Length: 363
Image 1 (cartoon, one colour):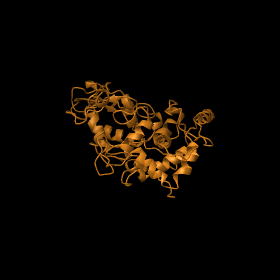
Image 2: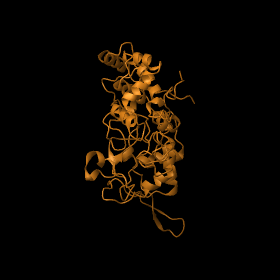
Image 3: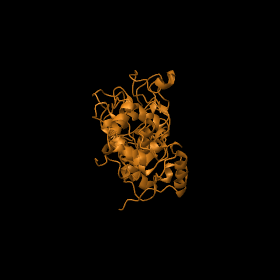
Image 4: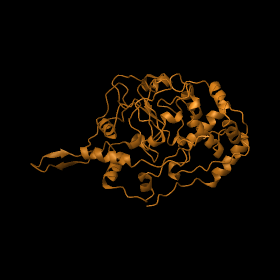
């Protein structure tokens, strides 16, 4: 069956972006044709001073895979965010330029267009602010922006690319961050089997459909009882659902909240509390998207769960008790097939990425 494309955003966005370009003074840059499913919603996150352009996105893509941005020219953004793994890297903790593990698991970059606070603890209030941190972090890419600028200036490649994107061949920190984030905002993932189901273009198989019902079902509503095959014994049925949609609701399967899900009894990582200083935020981490979740193992902020089955088992068990455990986290009665069906539904969230997001040809 032929795959349908994204639902195109209206021509109005092109007009709006053109106005932004004039305001930003980016010369002959052309607006990037941003498209996504309308049911994802239009509350997107693009700064007024950094509209998406074809030239800016192309430059950002090249910078994303540019190893000169690391202290010893060995890693790039694309090292820890690989396209084949939905822009994660398959490790519990990524390795920096010097082989030092990062503090937390590498997050997917899919659908950042709708995100407003970044990292597991939400410490960055914009994608541009987020991009700065791994570039300069002591154990990630560990290079000053001045050194990165100098290295790019030493090539004959980047001056014309910056001129095309920003109207000047002057390479600046601001333009590096803007280009990188323009590219990252185009990493929209949709057209999964679940999307085609929403659009009545695909029929979920029985296991996927049961998993969907469990995922969005109310975890607190009992279905009554049933009679065992022998002896007429009354046995509790599974609850109507697992309640996953309470935190991962909506087509994008995430929200801008933080939760203590009971991963730890004693906190190795204080999470959101490191940002807010509030005791009740201990062990809270951002609700991340489940889009492409089948590709992004291992799971959780510490990469401690290796498979989707382990994730489902963990949540079905209600997590580990601790003083700050969210009230939404509680054990639910899910039989073995229920859990298998949930995993099948989660697999149906694996979708497409736009073309031309891998490493560009070397010049």
